[in-house]
Amino acid sequence: MRILTGGMNHESNTLNPIITGPEDFVVYYGDEITGKGLLPGYASTGIINTLREAGAEIVPAVLARAVPNGVVSAPFYYSLKQEFIHRTREALARGPLDGVCLALHGSMKVEGLGCAEGDLLGALRELLPGVPVTCALDMHATVTAEMLRGADAFVGYKTAPHIDCPETGAHAARMLLAALKTGKKLATAYRRVPMLIAGEKSESEAEPMASLIKACRRLEERPGILAASFLLGFPWADDEHNGVSALVSGFADGPGTEASGIEKAAGELAAAFWERRGDFRFRSEFYGPREALAVAYRAVLEAGERPVFVSDSGDNPTAGAAGDATDMLERVLETLDTVEKLPTPLLYSGFYDAPATAACRKAGTGAELDLTVGGNWDTLNGRKIPLRVRVENIVRNFGPFHADLVLVSHRNLRITLTSRHIGFGEAELLPALGVNPADYCLVVVKLGYLEPCFRSVAARAIMATSRGCSNEVLETIPYKKVPRPLFPLDPDMEWVV
Ligand SMILES: [Zn+2]
Image 1 (cartoon, helix red, strand yellow):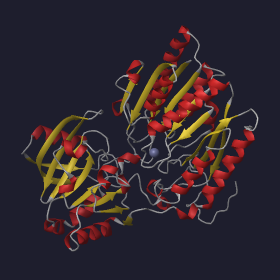
Image 2 (tube, helix red, strand yellow; image 1 turned 120 degrees about the horizontal axis):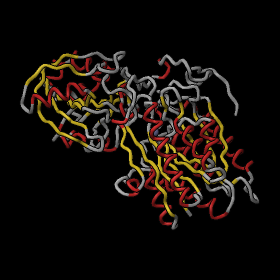
Image 3 (tube, protein in one colour; image 1 turned 90 degrees about the vertical axis):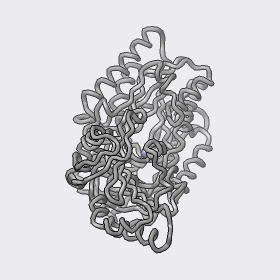
Image 4 (cartoon, helix red, strand yellow; image 1 turned 30 degrees about the horizontal axis):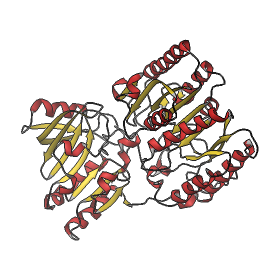
């Protein structure tokens, strides 16, 4: 068994003006994928380990990953695709390929093209007609007709925050192995549910997702069904395909395992999802930015709670926002007199601001300087805020994207700055700067739901529905392309599967 593998992982936020380019991606080629690219949290790692255990020969092509951001540069995507095709042709020259198993996001958009995954799968299918293809997808995949034509079976993550990526990769690999072992054909049934869901309403531990995911797991025990998934789409892409998908993959033939079994199951899932449409709610308490801060200040100063976390959810780079909107920072600066009364500095993590980071680096630790923070990219929801700061700490080449990190102070405020669009949800980022968030009474972070590293220390989590490219109040986003009617934009719409 020779199996082609690889992947592409990017969630493209079409409201963010940044074009995601080569400098934003980490790309592994060929054997690098099974070497330094075999990282613990990846779906591709689950695929590779499962195929290896089954004794398959792995043919690694390309694995490209970036933090969610604006749409992907067309020349860069086409270079990735070319590399995929080139390596597949090379592998074919050495002998036949029996299957393809890929780790894809499912909401990667390319400037001028649209769905990257559909385009790549189509190209591979042309090269490998009749060869079974399975894919692991992110829960926030936007399923398109091209994707459905380009692969035979799909399985999506079942957790948000996504902590089952390797397991999902392993699941995709097992489906391919099952098809190769039995010689049966794989097939996928698809139902689109006309809904959009704000990211922070879809946590899998909370209702209704907890019950809906349980329904997927129950279906996966039915004979002939190999995977049942809800792909929620990506609400911050104004895209004509956006919506929720119910996907059920299984065997297309054989006794008791007719394609009709998966069709029926997909219909059941879609109906179950629509039934719960009114039950999606924010799990944490949420307020507009001013009120969120007022509640947080009271929690610290009057109730002695600490650390209190406030999510600047409208500008969450891990949801593809620019990471430099200043709506929330301006609200903090308006209340600096209250910030002065806090028992520790207010920690704000942070801002993607390459020029400000470079200026601090040049000035050096301990220097005082005037700079502007934010407003380089998201000029709709931000502006360059002038601040006099002291440089507290500088870290070079942090993480796989080689970001520079800086910690600055302004009165009783500490702000982290990054030279690259890497997000602020990583457990290692603040410790790298010598910062332990548990030492602070109030932490504002550009995130939505708190990642486990923050949730484990937060005495209280408050979500601010701030302005930015990951605005959680979908009803206020001026969509132009999403297909209407769509719930909750059209709250009274009717729909049957
Ligand atoms: Zn996701």
